[in-house]
Amino acid sequence: MDTPKDETAAGGAVLCDDGLKRTPWAASDPLLRDYYDSEWGMPVWDEAGLFERLSLEGFQAGLSWLTVLRKREAFREAFAGFNPDKVAAFTDADVARLLTDARLIRNRAKIAATLNNARVTVGLRESGGLPALIWSHLPERTPLPRTVGEVPTTSPESVALAKALRREGFKFVGPTTVFAFMEAVGMVDTHLLDSHRRGCSGIWGSDGKRLPGFGLPA
Image (cartoon, rainbow, N blue to C red; front, side, top):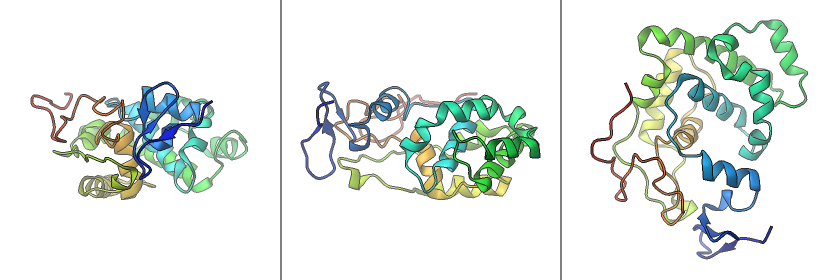
């Protein structure tokens, strides 16, 4: 692959060999580029999808996202497609199985948190469900970053959502992890302004405000 050209030298969007501009972290590795182009920042509304992404963000803590992305299909297989009901029913034998699976990130605390969070997710259905809890923290505005240095790592909404999740019993959901999660599922748009993916979620206008008429799913 040709080396991408950084036209701004200050952490701005990178002009890639296909003629499209992307944020620097998505400019080189093919797996990251495909993820960025097809999934990152697109709205996720369903319970299983949100549970998966929240789980993977927890596993990513202290590691690179590329490490997690390379293991994603193995995670899906090992964690029953991130079906909350199935993961909530995992036993000590399943934990032992996961800890010996070399394809995964074999961290006992993160595995235990994922099982715990599945059980909390199932329990939340009685009070509206995980999607409603998460999307109730959608901000009124999104950042307008021109460079990587202008992309925040937390927000008032990520702090509030992290507190709400912990109050329900979720683990591995600090404000920074939650903000990364919010970026991934389209709750904020931190694509650089001249990235070809800016505005892909359909939620935000060019001024950073929520588009008129946008409503949360029922």
